[in-house]
Image 1 (tube, rainbow, N blue to C red):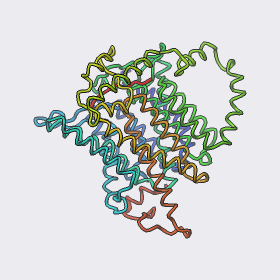
Image 2: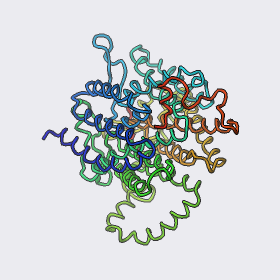
Image 3: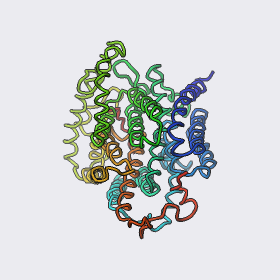
Image 4: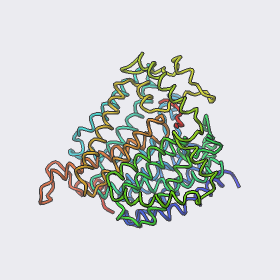
Length: 524
């Protein structure tokens, strides 16, 4: 049997229990028909991933699949989330033969943005109330505009034209659609559930990769004639799972977001047993990545959720006592000792990453000091960073904030940080004020804080930026819903300037229907 067929068979077999559990979670929220479309879309896209002989062939077949499915779904935005992680997230240069060898870099999330998010954005833009600028929009637009202006440093038209569309596709388009298309608490729950459903089968794939020391999706990369600097990455003798995220820490980031999204979904809407089974799968995938940044990010999210729900914290604390007493009997001591050895700050596995991180921070500040406001395109050639070249011949910029400051300067970093700090501050205020709200502001707060912590342990590679820009839009939508409810009169009538849920053209009503540089960052 060809290896790619064998790999596809393993992925589909692993997806069976994942979708069985996912159905018990999702059907109460989205309906059986809608979930069937989610599942079938994921299976079909996964089949196309393994059977396509090139990336362009995959894109063409994926486009046909989306055209077929898009009108059948109540909310096309869910299809974007479900399909975002089905194929290896690698950039491929696409051009026009004879004119431009490399016109734009495409990866699966960008292809989906063009096929799904762009038509949605056009529909939303047709509504005057959706075009109205919000305070939280300013930093996003300013950040993307700053990056676009700095792109002119490339000097040649081909390079400038290649990178600028990528900024607007990855940042503004994703943010705009997610912040406008989600208008109710039920819409928010369904989007969060889509992230859970998309992550569940890949979490099991990651566990399988960890146990078998086999990167299942690497065969796809070979068939597409693409290359990886480090196809297999180990820690303490074990393979770090990556699945379609390519980078272990990006895979851990995906599982962290899936688990945090599951925390945010109101428990009364799903069965408790299935909720726990899904959480075990996602946390298992998170562990299989052996990526300590996402581990700590998820721990931070859990702490925030527990602080906001004292009764839940007390119940879990009482459960922790017998669990701790039984710990020596739950597995061999050697296994427990090995797990402890992998923990950050406590364990001793891969201690060199901590020293590297400290040296990177010290060297980066020196380089940033030379071009503090707008950064530098050739920062990697600085002598202070050249000494950090690793065995693969790369400089591992394991901090997204440092990455932005080095390449785009402190002014761009300030716009980036101000935007996310404003979201966190808004969610924190809503968590304190609206303790009985249907919208899970506390869980969204924990999710965003977990994301902001984790991107401080890795550069924004693979699926990481696509996830956090989408979730930032989702958080802004939650904040906008709270403000709309605060302005709503007691009678519940529509507010002037606020869209009714089912107003506008049929496609718009369906949106709210109830039914440039490749810098590897494996992180800590």
